Length: 371
Image (tube, rainbow, N blue to C red; front, side, top):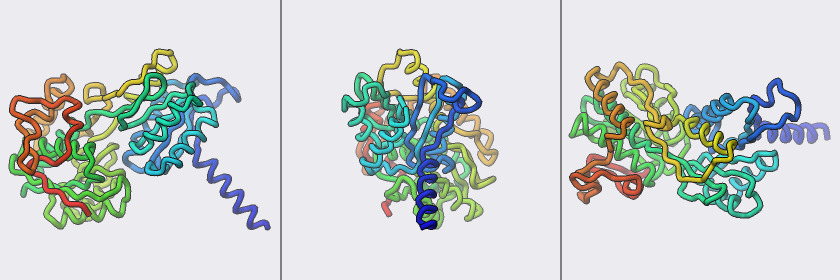
């Protein structure tokens, strides 16, 4: 019986840890002090994953610091975004704990949040969803950004150190979001070396470190001198470090897990969305929109460039970055062709946001396989 009670107590404590509170209003303030916002985050991974979820969590911490006693937050980790019931339960549990803002930090939470936002039961709750395309006019917003800008710059860095002209790319799924990144990376690489070859392996998952690492090793064996990735962990960097002579480019969060072989990273400054959005909610001026951050707004970022990249290319990268920030450089400016010979972008044409999000294939210079 004692053993049974101990197990039950452990389970209760584990559940209490899963929904964790972090907020300056809980630290040193009066018990039960009112806050303007109580934000609940739903995370697909662990907050210390060195990648996607950590970038979201760091933004949450920055927002909490910005607003002090006006805000507190809770979060749940490792919620499968392919399970609508789990997503719904996570959101409702956070609301039941007093959250009046819910942030769904993965694409797959979209339908669950939409249903809650439009149910009529939670009209006093604001739902913010990362990477989706659904919203309403009252309490449901979506947000993303022009990550193609940072991907283009990292492609330039990769090509600069790939002496044999081969780079590898571990990619989650052959979805538009992922293909935009692959294509932008390839175009940046081609700006440095028009003959660069980008080899892509689709792994069929957003986050599985073992699968990611195996795919990176496969690309290295196929001749990749640089590897990058669109997946949630830093396993691709670890594969590069173990190879010993292959460079790596990070993603989602500026974490270096391969030492001197780390070139840079394309990542999200999520506080650049959280802080102004939470302020608008507090002020009563929030209006749902399809928010799209850029390099200029700071939501899209690139880490410092390694000295392994020649100085002249580093200078070119900085110059292009400055043009992006000024709004004078469009990554998808024609002529650009898909690798099957069809036209993505005509000469003299520059794709707008809708055009970019109509991308369905890889550009010329990319070879892709699915594992």
